[in-house]
Length: 86
Image (cartoon, rainbow, N blue to C red; front, side, top):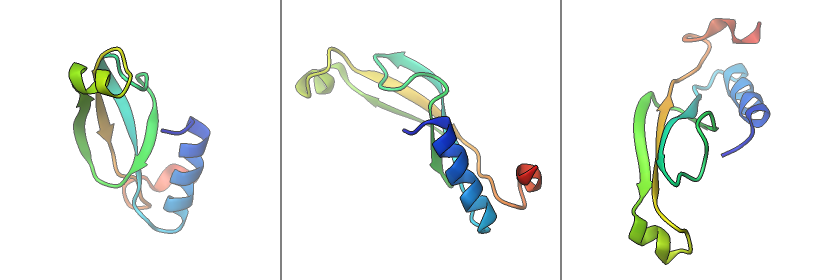
């Protein structure tokens, strides 16, 4: 995951070129999650998804316990968000 300025720059670049992209934002965490709520990456499909790792799998790669991230993705393009340039 990247910083918010990196996400904004990439989102604006995709929007300017007519592509569809969108921030995937962590909206909830459970257990030992690798990113905090509010962390963002870019994705292109609308969805709400959960990603996680079990305690046993986490221990196998040197982590103390597993965790889960719940993310929300909302597509952004010139049609869905025409005011982005403002």
